[in-house]
Length: 380
Ligand SMILES: [Zn+2]
View 1 (cartoon, rainbow, N blue to C red):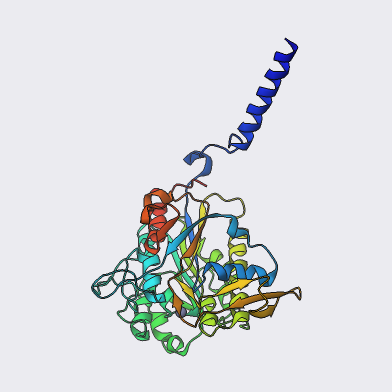
View 2 (cartoon, protein in one colour):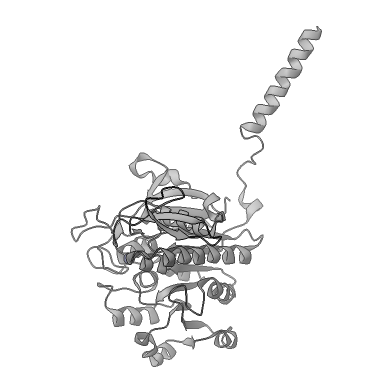
């Protein structure tokens, strides 16, 4: 009898242990009423940000980037040729178009399908639902990524066409690095209802404006205006809309520094992207109505990093240690990039590219956002 009691206690203990180790402590999927609905979507794009860039930023700063603990999936970034055939290493125009419109297109095309027809962007759909929309980038506003979210052109080099289409897009906030190609359009900016702001005082004065066009010195890690600071102002500006908002934020300089194999520029731009994520998280606080997606349009440079391989080039970290790195070249690669999501369960299984729920296409990132706009559910 005694033996039996001991055995029973042992069995119960084992069952309780199993319950805790196999998920009974994990709450069941929350219902809509528990978590509310997604009103706001923030997509943060690290241009050229491969997975090694994310590691490089963490090694350089000697700190863990919290977003790397979020739900994660790998993303295929290929674009297509002029006959619509896939598997070409993408540029930022086709990559941005895939993310912004869910359309695979030809390199150089901006929010056009491979036949050259305009396609709707996720911001168009957000506007149709009465939401505020914004595009924020360290690039020029006509740079390929912000352009793909807010304009249309058959060639990413058609600066005038892109800016003109952006000014008539209806997007509420256009924010980017200062450029004469845009300051020359001061009249068009005003005629299309945008209030031009070139410093934080302007932003404060125009905080109740319908639409705003912000231009700052934001290009590169020595710029006077930081992406993370502008992001906080952008969140304030767009969140006035009670229907919510959809905003794209791009750290364009991960790509730009990687093209010139400038490791210091690349890791400092990664730090800025991580700070930007932190800014958005601070704004969210304990809200349950805002989703974040972090991804890249492609990888740039074929970067590899190491803490041990001393045969590679080295960079001194913020704490005076060494990190080691190598670049393959100065071009885009077709390496997979990452999608990290906060506040949503996008059900990757519906995007089972290659029959794997761990790899999706760039156009599926758009699909996740469309689903959020359609059913608004926050599964968290
Ligand atoms: Zn590039």
